[in-house]
Length: 151
Image (cartoon, rainbow, N blue to C red):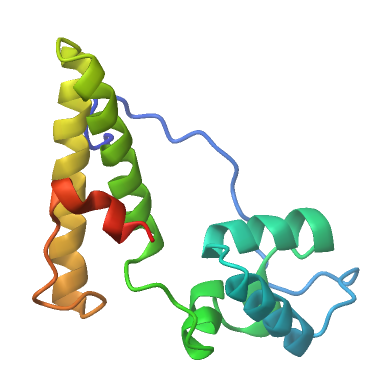
């Protein structure tokens, strides 16, 4: 299948193991992992940052195989989830940075096109999150107030 905004069809990249079993070398219990996730979430880390930190520092390759829950599910369970989901927040941040760039470089048309594509992704994602109930139905993306969504 082709990529969303290009003609590329590449699917190269790392793949997860087919076996969904807990490796024998992990010395952490599921409760300990949940406590670690909660601690890092209180410090303001996102779910992907927590996953990377657990992988690189603690040697935990996959939280779901160990504890039976995804990192975001653990964060939601502990009531530490942000109002705006992480992927939407990243797209809003990207759009805000491109808008700031375009204030200084008004003639940068490739950047302007990238901003259009990013805004399109944001609007599609907002529509999905409203439909699934992860965002309030009255929530609206306003590019001029993008910095308020990032807090």
